[in-house]
Image (cartoon, rainbow, N blue to C red; front, side, top):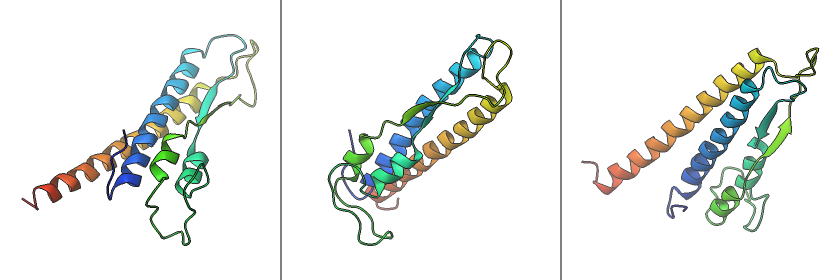
Length: 140
């Protein structure tokens, strides 16, 4: 359920980013688990461009921004919630003799990067809520 108010877009964006990063983490973990499965092709979730398009007003209704520095006021939250990402196959350049295309080092690197981005999103969301709490308590 989106939160309405001044932080709508930021909170919706961070929440969606957390959801998509969790899905991506599951795909990466699946790739690692199938590192020895013959003919397995690793998969990943791409969603960054789709999220940016939703923020800029590229998906669904809502007016496009006249200036990139303007904050979108209506419709961004609904567009952000419609972002699902796309699962793509990401085979290694040189698959193994059994046809397995998982490069364990590459997958572990993706996992670490995804985890860092997930943690950043969670920390930023916590800071937003901390700011709201401070405003409600009138700075006390």
